[in-house]
Amino acid sequence: TNSFSTATPPSVKSIADAPAPFKWPFIGTLPDFLSRGGIDKFAEVHESMYREFGPVYGMSILGDDEIVVCDPVVFGSILRQEGKFPIGAAEGVSTFTDYYKENNLTMAMRGASNGPEWWEWRDSLNADMFAAWDTYMPAIAETCRKISDVAGYEVSENIAFVDFISRAAFDMFETVMYGSSSFTTNSKVAKPEDIEFVMASQAAFDITGALLSNPMEKLFEGDLYKKFVVNMDKTFSFARKRTKKYADLALMDQQQVQQPQR
Image (tube, rainbow, N blue to C red):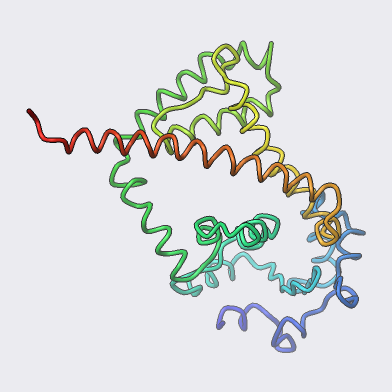
C-alpha cells in the first residue's frame, strides 16, 4: 500500500527485503523468537528487534512471513486504507481456525475469516446486537447485579479470582445468547455441567496461549495439543446441547403465539 511505502526505507520493497534474523528452512525465525523470550515476553521480543533492526523488520514463524512496522503515525494511515474487508486478528490464532476446519464448523469459520463471508455473518448479528439492545441490556445488568452480590463471598471462600472472572464472563455471555444465565459465579446454584462447560472453555484458551509459544507442539500434535482438542470438543458439545435446548423453547413459544385463539 501507499502507507507501507512511506513507512519503509527505499531498500525495503517487500517482506523479503526487510532486515530480519536468520531464517531457517521450514521453521523460519522461530529459534530467534524463542531466544528473545517467546510469547511470554512478547513486548521484550519486539523491543529487542527494534533496537537491533530498526523501525522495520521481518519475521517468519513456521512459514508465516510478516513484516513489522514500528511507527504509530503509519498505523492509522494503514488502517484507513485496509479496504472494505480488513483482516482480523482471529485469523492468526491457528489453533482455533484449524479446529474449525477439521470439524467443519462453518459458522465459526465465517466468524474468524475476512471478506464477504465474514461481512454476511457479522451483518446478520446487527439486528440483535444493536436494534434489540434494549431487550438484552437490562438482562445483562441484572446478571451483573447478581454476580456483584456474591463476588466478595465467592472469591474469598470458594472460587479463585481468575476463575471467578471467567465464570462472570460466561454468565454475561450466556445472558446475551439465551436470555438467561446459569450463574456459575454462585456456588449455591451452579450446576456441575455448567462449571465443566466454563472450565473446558477456559482451558482451551489457556492452552492456546501456550501453543502460540510452542508451535512445534501443535505441529506434531503433542499431549498439550491433544488436551486442547479434548477441551474444545467438550466446549462445542456443551454449546450444541445448550443452543438446541433454547432453540426448541423459542420454537415452542413461536408456535403457541401462531396458534389461532379459540
